[in-house]
Length: 113
Image (cartoon, rainbow, N blue to C red; front, side):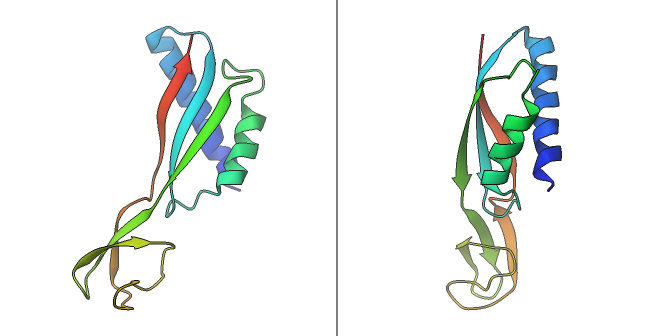
């Protein structure tokens, strides 16, 4: 489960920001997770709850927004929404798709005090 290491890394980034921006408490974390990022949303929720214990984010709420996967089909020269890696193009059925979006996880916003 790589979500645990992602959650631990996220807490590390939050703690670094707390030092540089001088806040002491995180009350909410807003994440954006792309459909093609290979991050399981429910696993991330579970791991987040586990890693925030004893940190400045203990008790913080987690909001996750899922973004669609986007790819460029080289066969039909169209930008298409892509549900999973290695799926065919929904327009032409081709498999030559270059991922152009929806493959990342971002901390979009922190609510702090």
